[in-house]
Amino acid sequence: MATLKVLLACYWPLPHLGGVWPYMLQLKQQLEYRGHTVDIFGNGPDIPKYHMVNQNRGLLKDHILPFLKVKLNNRSYPGINSNSWLHTVELDRYCMELSAAYFGLDSYDVIHSQDVISTLAMSRVKGKHTGLVASIHGSLAREVLYAVEKDNLEGSVRAKISRYYRTLEHYGAVSSDITITSTEWMRNLLIQDFQVPAEQVVSFPYGLDTDTFYQIQALGTERTRPPGKKVIICPARLVSIKGINFLIDALARLKRVRSDWVCWIVGDGDLRKPLQEQAKALGLTQDVLFLGQRKDVPALLTQADIFAHPSLQDNQPFSVMEAQLAGLPCVVSNAGGLPEAVLHNVNGLVSPVGDVATLSDHLHFLLANDESRQRLGQHAAEWAKEHWSLATMTDRMVQQYEAAWNKAVWRMSHA
Amino acid sequence: MRKIIGDLYNRLFQVQASSPGAVIDYDVWNRINEALPEDYILPDPRTAAELLKP
Image (tube, rainbow over all chains, first blue to last red; front, side):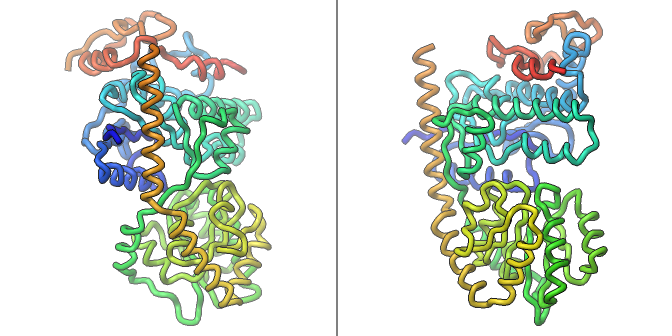
């Protein structure tokens, strides 16, 4: 097996909250352990720039964007300028392309992009000799659609935004040599909704860095479970796509029948204040605690009895994998790829998205039945050990890198 | 920082209109220009076509 020089590329700010950044870090570590060389490229986390994260090299967008705004002006390109949101995204992805060219891509055997925007960008500026593997961690077009549905936009504007992101998602997912998803749900979505050829999409699950997880767990936490109460834990970004409002409604319903529980919501986001207000309005101030962003989640999981994850859309969240590794039964919605990780009545309980009554009933059932809760939790731990191997994921990834690289070699020999 | 007129890189754009006031950093843009594929063009025709629709 050849050692490869790999670039991990991501459109989102690096580092960031959420699962993609830890995924990139653990993949880098695993690849380097196998002798490969890995760099990371993405948006800046603070000031407007693109940067090679591990090399401490950055290029301010000020070198590029003002010139693009002059050249791609409304007179020459009325389409690009027809909507300010889309104008910003379109110019920023060109900025990503030009920044990648600035840093240089020629030395890489494989570029592994982490979203449709970076995939499109890399496909336009890389050389033919470089393979391109795309990991699509979620459906950007669908997430944007959820977001714009909440805004009071005109129908035609909403339709335009939706069409634009569908175009990005289609071309992003077909621009690579190989496209990887972690769930069959995401794979089928790309094939059926975004017309990606089935033979291009490979699916295998994420792995979990269990060593780091157990190290953090061993450090412990100052927070302890309240006496006489069981703990329902929900680690998640507090954004609308995570559906935390449904969990709070379900907890209000649960409180009418029992009060031997508290819920720890671990994470931060734009919705923190509205969710706290929702909990207060429902009389749950003492029952639902917002712990904010925490570094001791693996240790908090050891203090918990039930994991809850009521997402509107999700792929294969790390929070579910970690909860399973900690031996917690998972009470989740049937959004996206969640039912592939959580099998109903085997290692958790699954309810329809937004079905507050069933979610509440599931929590009630597990609080009332110690034997069932422990059995599902034990199965969750076994499932995690069997399915979430980081070494297996990395081996599969390297196979895909080699396949993409071979495609690139073939391209060069037929150019 | 060496400043030059942006029009030197008009080949990167589909519409090659003159922008006399636009100056850019030579070192940055020369490096970018040399690294881009020969057929690179702005904007991306695929999304630009979509955005032209009403």
